[in-house]
Image (cartoon, one colour):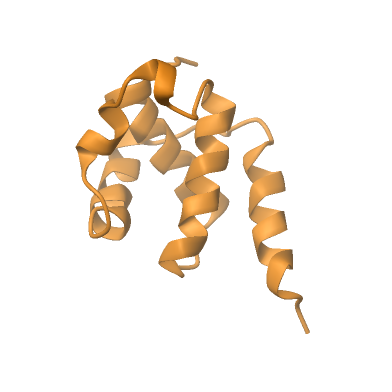
Length: 95
């Protein structure tokens, strides 16, 4: 039997690992399908000084954290692709 926090902990730890090759186009499709129902793109355009995301690693951690709310079994590849899309479209932390 899995503990309730075990999946969350695994996702967060995995998100902190270096990203594999990401597909930002696939990430956009996933974001629009799985994330767009709760919030819209402008949420990512807030003032940089007020954003809790300050690096690509933190962006990946946030994607993993919020993925738990959707209750969809995202793969690590899915999370990487969503983070790559958000970085390309909004955050622009770069490689």
